[in-house]
Image 1 (cartoon, rainbow, N blue to C red):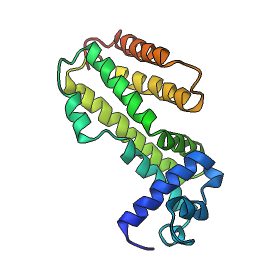
Image 2: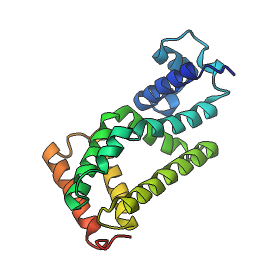
Image 3: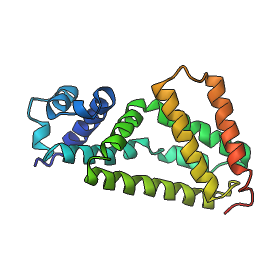
Image 4: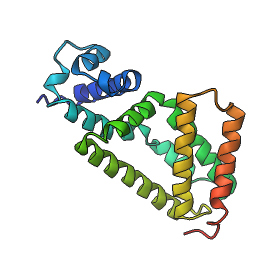
Length: 195
């Protein structure tokens, strides 16, 4: 296998775009080579097989979905109250929606993981780490609510993002805004003591 990390990353990023646009069946080495604008056969020099490619894509999507350090610093600023919590959730929905191909590719990977145990293991580990990191951030942040609030918002906002990306005419931008506000408010209702 070739070792050029920049080329590997470019191929994985190209695979994300192919996966989002063409689905799991369309994710071939040839399609990745075309998307990455590299000579035919390049992807096959970097990945042992399609399972390897799927697994690599599963790890890379989450790297690209994470907030950058500036966003993390901003999230710790100001009063940590319900309004701030809602603001952070609006930023989250906007950030993830902006990388729509990544999120759509992640949905494809989730479906594909029902047939590929190695991919399922990568996604399970990565998503569980993400949930645990969010719970840990919340506990240290001073934001209202508890760990259940975090998980409820995770589940609720994930489906809202799916609606925005797959059926964008279901909710207007104003309705999306109101739904995020309501999700925060209602998830905090029982978890106001923190935890």
